[in-house]
Length: 68
Image 1: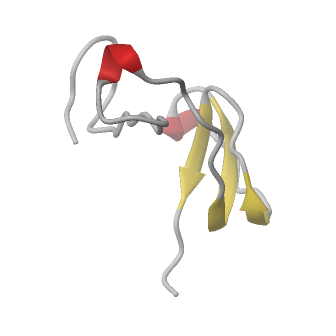
Image 2: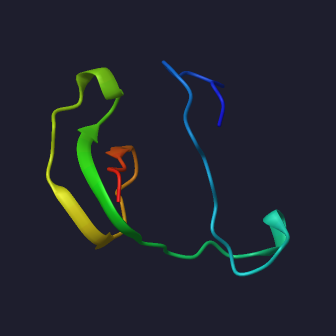
Image 3: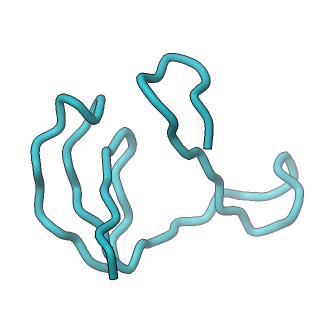
């Protein structure tokens, strides 16, 4: 978690790859079991969305992770 670059608050960046070396591995698709899509862009401008299951979020998506 961090607040780096052009951001309005803490956020998470992660990469899922097929190897243990960042520069020596290929990115792999991933899915989240459950999340709520809030919109695209900054969180304060996002609108409440629908819950999604077993889905891959789109680039730039703002998500919420409800309690189990």
